[in-house]
Image (cartoon, rainbow, N blue to C red; front, side, top):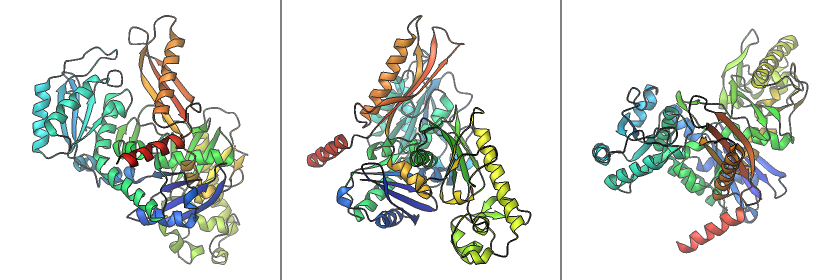
Length: 523
């Protein structure tokens, strides 16, 4: 058996799955400031046979919340290799003031970097890097983000610069290298690397909290964190690349919706207490956002799902004219909603009054005018349908899967979308999505494609993506390619083409367990 856990800002959801992928138990518990007790309570509510648990998969929004709040971030030295180019826009130029202040705003421009085809832009200057290291040491900064022009094509400059800086600063300093984190596009990739460096200390704290929580319920199985793209990373990877978990919440919900409904291609409406997230599934995986994305007002190029959010949730306030949201009572729903004895009219009250849900005390909303309730719920349905329509890319019929605790607001059909499904265990779809997560590998870089060699270059990229997935812990023989993107760069010579290939496979628990046992014995 395995356990999926999703640690949200309001609730911690948990699901227990058997080896046949059936959901055996589900539970919700309030998220706690220390993380540990909330996770412990959710797992205890499942009452799992701990000796049968082979793995625990956890999704969390805490890293993203820390960036949004500008809290618990470590000071970072952002070292960019690109002079004499790139000087017009120093690191963190377009960051919001709060986030830039939280990481210290320390940017360093040095020589180095490559052209798109790997040719040297300017040679590294070791003495320049040593002077930079001296300033970093004088400021007492313990985390360094190194970025370089076109490093996804040629990573040598970043690696060599990190070696020089580490030689000066010592082994106690963390290094985050941009070619390991982002895609083509310097500024967005650099931003992702700086954010990652700022979260390294927090990652250690959070990972240890999860480990402690599982130990308290006597679970000794390995645990993994879910990534933005719906795949898994182990504990060591999570400590090194915490930024890879940013969008795991919506991803888990969408993957869980696909699994619970049995649909690989559909729209997903995930309704929580405050917002509704609408996304599209293709082949069982969320459609990814094209190009750059934004996190806390910072441009990045993470692999995140393409999601449209609107301010409608179970706790949304309902105005006298029947308009719902965007303001919400959030986690105070069970105190403030009419059906729970409160004095605030919420969307949940509308659902209960209309007979769509059986929560709280229905007699407390019996006085609501039936016409008013119907008009308000119809307006919610119109807005949800409009969002789904904006997200789809063709006029072909598209089934809609509603998940999340607030999906009681979604009717049996939406305007223009007759096939609406609410699967079993819809309230913990996010935890189920975490539990079924696979291991992935991705290649995203510029290839040179000589005349008549396209097929062989694509095959090379596919093989590399499969190899990366297997190296990350996927079971050999289960890995398959789920996405190929090919973009010819017409303005560059030599048949330059940006190729992105993504491969996923089942987690090899036997190999992971053997590695852990060997590591324990060695220790």
